Image 1 (cartoon, rainbow, N blue to C red):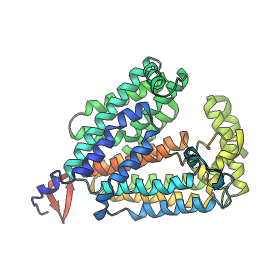
Image 2: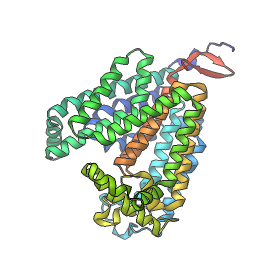
Image 3: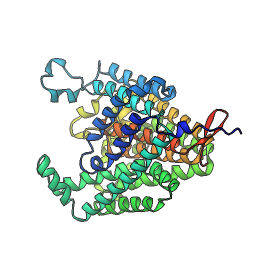
Image 4: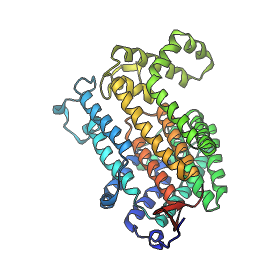
Length: 420
């Protein structure tokens, strides 16, 4: 190994990029608590501001190509989609919300720019940004927990004065979504906190998530996602490349076989057997999954078209509450293969990282599994604020990797991670 002084890389030589990422992570606290829909605009604005940093950025082709293909196929599917919008009916700005295809194109460009530009952030800038993220998430966890103990009274008061009055149950549901944000970023934040020896904040953060989830009766997706992400973190931390390979295979199987699993559960009697033992929300999901699987069989190759999930009336409430089933239903086997290819690309990037920095790779694996679990159970695939959070999670993973470099040591022309 050769040692060289490259203090210039550790210096704050990316002030604009650092300011953008630092500010974006700082805003996870107010947005995560009071306005989750704002994450889509935040990620888009950050992407615009990061455009100057794209000159030397190298977007990861193995994940960008599948995303481009998926958006292209989604746009093509509008030619047969049950939810295709008549452009002549668009008379107000609010009508533009119906154009999911247009939004996907914009998000691909802006969110992609954000993630690509983040690779240029300096070591010092990455450390500042990651510390800010960890502090913001801790503040978010404490705020959600304290308000949960008050029945979301503070959130309801703020909403009534800024927008309109809401019922207590909606207020509790909305602040519970802050826990999703924390779980998504938790492992990246926890590794950074361990690096600066503030590990206690990690325990405060996750204790608040567990407590508020239980108190708000929003435990399902939150704690399931945390448990799965914990398993992914430990698996990659212990088994490194083998762990990444296991997660990659499991993800691919999920995307490719989801309808078959549901149909097997229907015909084998498993779904009927477990109904009496699950909560109402899960019983409703079983109904949706069963209906979606039956519709997938009718058009297995091309699907029913982009946004078609919204067109089946009361049988499906907006989306299928399962990412793989929604992609199969709307984009068919072609869309499912492309989605699987994207996740294979994600795991291949994490595998490459695991060869250099096992801990950072474990954190990235935890974030990937948390995103898939929460999004798969709770939100639609095309929900823009959740896609924006996905882009921000990718930036967090990139910044974590950069923050763990030692700017004083170079090995074969590359910066070396502080830890393994």
